[in-house]
Image (cartoon, rainbow, N blue to C red; front, side, top):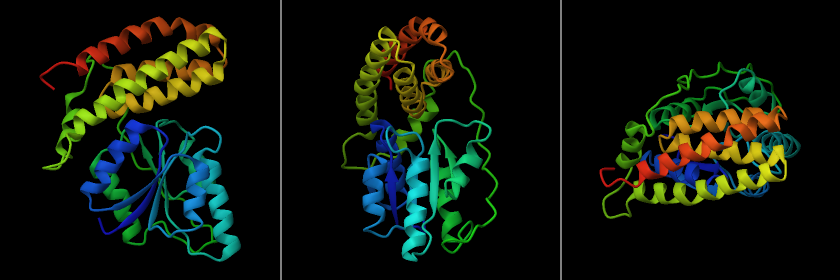
Length: 265
């Protein structure tokens, strides 16, 4: 990539590890931030050629973080830094929300190395950039593949893409990512169950969203779709529907972990 230095803002350990590997493969020097507060601190003290911004983070989400950074740029007369929105919600209206917050591009997770390369190159050629404070017409939302429900527990193509990012002499990236997913997804399942027990639909929504996002990045597509159903029900305040889906979700999670533990991966 002609973009040489970016800030990656991502609070999910699996997603961050995969994105870092993709960026390294593209020859991009990357600084990581785990939340919006840390991102603002870095953005106001250091210069980056682009920012990859997770939209759905607790406390200070990507939308608010981007809007506050744009205000800071304007107040200090700084050159506009391109921001790419990263979200696991490929829903109608999401693109408009991203652009309204001051973001310039949109990538739906899980994204491929080719999609990441294309979006970074769009900034290298000067597309979608405008002087700070000038409203440029928002670019069209990139077309993303539709999420399809599948009976296959794991999409091997997704795992192969991660495997292909491994570098000689370095720790096995796929094993590292799968280890992170195994531990983090178990913790998120526990959080979901606990939230259901105390009838906390917002905590259920957050845990289901995080599970959906990470699961897509390891090829657990069917499980990710189920997580999306729980997230949707919780977001609508339908505790009963969200809890009804939990048993199915737990069984599918077990199948995913069993599939990830097979030696032929």
